Image (cartoon, rainbow, N blue to C red; front, top):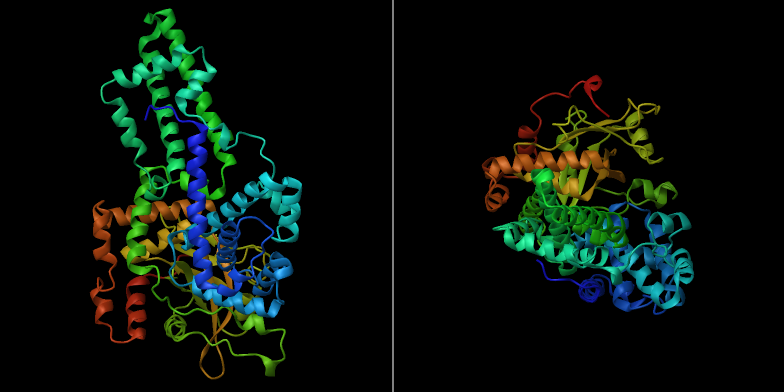
Length: 532
């Protein structure tokens, strides 16, 4: 804990982590889509970094439900001279998206996709700028990666104005550099002389999520932040307790350590950490006991329901809306998979209720719309990006109404309710997944003249940060109550055979009906009593 850390160690650990990460993802891209991997450009830097960034960004576009033709066009531009025509790329993107919807590597699970895609693009830009300079990088971001100027600045893909990785230093190094020198020695004495203080700080630093603990260079940052915060708090307590009775030299040293400690914490929080990539910042955000519990529950859930390589329920890439430009005789029928049809049969009688679940690792919502005003509203939903999401109180983030903004003409034509059962451990795990992912895939199902259900369209619904935080707190409290705080007990509660009623169901439809029986035991709450 007290050993000085230097920028060389931080830089080498950071480079090694990114090298291992990108190598693993590049191999995965070659396995999932040899055609896309083979067509990657050779003029944009190291192959592994480019391949990993492409895979992460393609996974992110699926989460965001971006139009597949535009994604294929971005691949053509990226490939440059090695590219092929858009139609072939569309098929390759479709195959990759479907493969990614099956459970995959940890960093390709839904709750890591956005930090991974943004983080690797930032890493590529930083690495590339060291070779060709930032003006060339900005040109390549626009012309090859499809990132416009607004996206470049919004993502912070610009020359660094603050400290870089070479400017890293630990707490004692910072004290030594910004004081007369005696303060650092005095701070070491405080750390060693207070009985058990060093061990207590170390124990507190380790109360973080396993995802953070596994990244060595980020644990350096986390440990030094914890050390500086703890010693600064101790020194402040000594100054307050000693008052005017402290000797002048001791008071001066203590005040200098206190002020320099605060300056170091500000330097880390406001200058150094913002210069890291979004992926690294997402790891550093998992620095609390709550984040550790959240990560532990997600690992238990993933091991059972999102095991790498296991097949997921089938989902569609193309919907009825995608075929609208075609003549009626040319349009394929986007028939929903059988499992969606069985869900739709049950929920078509449920009024404004929709289905919630997790497919692969992605949160999905399904909602059955009737022909006429409701289906027309579904075709307009989220076209301008505006969505209205509400729940009764801060204690009910698991029970949401979703629809148009109040001023929209279709505000009363499409109001959907999605509810996660707070007494069901599996559903609370899915709420935890939703809170971490930050968005749900919403599929609108409609019955055609033959009685079969078709997928009208699919959109990605992003959740506000405050709602995500409330969801996480709700899920953690519920899971802690069910497990008694022992994360190891979760596996028994969410195992496929854990629910006796569901286990006794003979058919998939009976499973859906059994879930609905326990899920909706009350009516819709009044719209006037809803907070949006």
